[in-house]
Image (cartoon, rainbow, N blue to C red; front, side, top):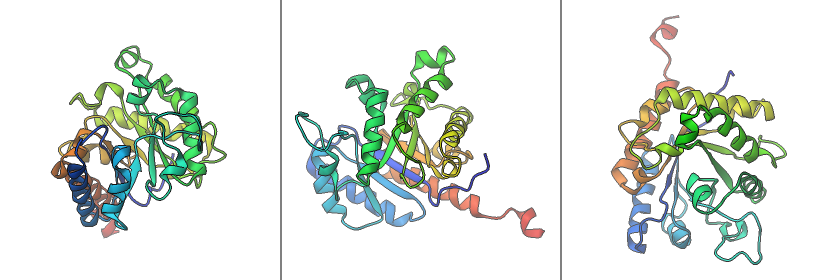
Length: 271
């Protein structure tokens, strides 16, 4: 599929249930805001725990840094103990992670639930980062494409259109998350290209512009190799986002890769 890259690469930090102290969360947010200011060619996002969302959003204020939530309910209100309504995220979160493998495994999040949350996020002006990916046993059984196809089709099934939705897809091979063992860039590109192809069957015009992120043990050392892949537009970063220097190295790698793509080749320049 011929495509023009999204205007900017996107790097999102998923803090998960970290840090536990408010002061540490605000310090980490300030560092991320400084990173975003230094690397303005990248859309930089942090997703703190819900309990810190309001204070983190106030701390960074209007800046180059975007703030996202780690999950949300599809419903606006009601008897949903412990959940967060999209209405509650208004003004606090511009993004929300939906369908993360830990939510699927630990909280029973289903493909149908992910579909509802993606559609609800879009309806409320929040950009969904829909996470999809295979478990190790599925990978070993050669079912990666089957799993990715099913999860992606479900995630977009309740959208009227992809164009204008703000949709972001994160490919996270479950076996690589937090393991220190990343997928190879070549393997990640194969899956990203498949995702792009599937998006094209839903909305051929919009599919080339949907950011596809890689997630799974992304570091400052390996990030550039992923960002150089033609269908990978950024990263969803877990543990690496909890260290300010590591997170900045990943954001800087995204910026460098984008600059490299904009630089005409010597041969093109000569011609």
